Length: 155
Image (cartoon, rainbow, N blue to C red; front, side, top):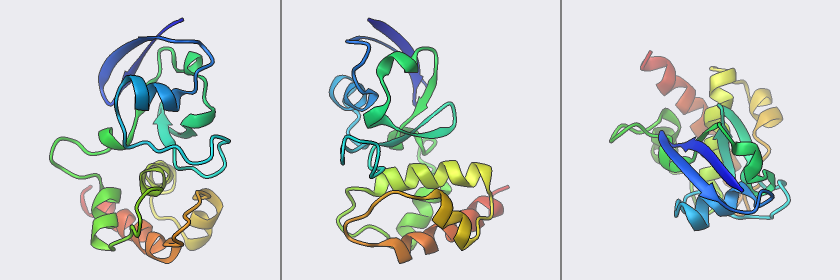
């Protein structure tokens, strides 16, 4: 099946089985390796991307549903050389330990900040449900608050 969509601002057309998880199209066909495979069951969040601005787990999203959509991966979060506030905050707070799950956390956080610009700790707990084996949750919480502040400063 041919599927057309916009990914990180670039128009793409792929010809794959309609039920192929979008994660594998992103990683294996489009060669965008920032989105990670974690569990394959939409539970861990390592594969989180944005589809039309919503955080989506790409491992459980069939490519057929991407037709005509606008997709953003971690590679498309920044604009040119300017880091997204979430990326900047992650660096400032030295969040990653192993770093494997961090693209998914950053994408989930960017989506959260679009909906709730100044999230409380409870908002974070309710909305950022990804899993980190290294347990950098404390640093992530600090970075989420920092990203909100950076985003507010740049308005």
